[in-house]
Image (cartoon, rainbow, N blue to C red; front, side, top):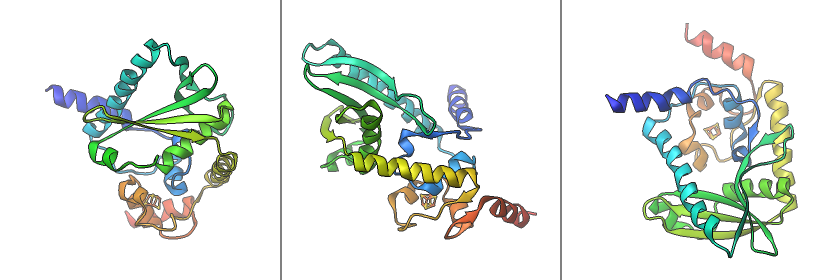
Length: 229
Ligand code: SF4
């Protein structure tokens, strides 16, 4: 009885999630998948237990913040900080910290033991995200803190602001916005279907149906609807 109710709560939150603007987590991601998110294209539904795990990640963040808020060696300048409002993108950093001389943007990521064990360098997609936080907050240093969900072990990486990388990401998002506004489905990733993003992509079926190259969204929808008659 409770399982069904709890599953329904999480699954209902998944519905009708048409996206209106970019999130920091879209930075560096497959443009076609982000396009499909904006257009609310049919996606493979995530299981309720996976959605619960996302909520679990929020609790891990709170666990990490507790000792940081009580230590004197680091000052939490602000937590859950939104990037300054602008048209292109929105996002919220976990915290801005100070060691008394420098400021740092903190981004906390949680993962399972297997991924954690193999992590020798920060994940590229996480570096992309923190670069945009550093860019918008005008803070030159960031910390990516990884938490092993299974045993709470930690690894941290210092990331320095890379202006060229941040601008490249923002330009790519601006170009993608033009395609979203003109209903032009972007090309697939170059290494489709071997890219890791394709392995987990909720839009894999529509991506396969659309085929390679840039495709008109309206023509694609008409073709799919026609073939379903
Ligand atoms: S399957 Fe791969 S190329 Fe296609 S939308 Fe998803 S991530 Fe992009």
